[in-house]
Image 1: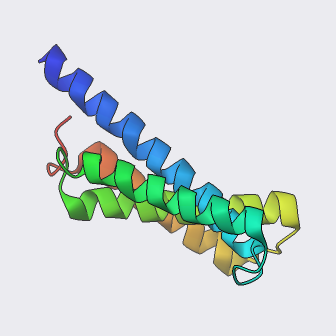
Image 2 (image 1 turned 90 degrees about the horizontal axis):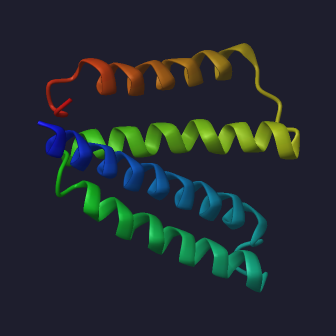
Length: 118
């Protein structure tokens, strides 16, 4: 069983790295001004490429729907947190409530789903 747990832990590390790449790429995309600024455009393209490449490895081990739910949910939460902290995006109660539901959904999948081997 420890070998299975190690493989799942590595899969989650790869998934979290894919999420970070996607968050960096999306943040750069918002600064690329429709791909008219070279450096943010390159960061966006390379970041998305790395994110999808890493994501493909996690789908060898976990169901694609579960992988995508975690990847997209955590990406939304992290991108929103960056926009709030770094760029002063205003979040109202509805936005905060929705984000808390996304976090709850990811936790429910991770903690209780039989689709992901624990």
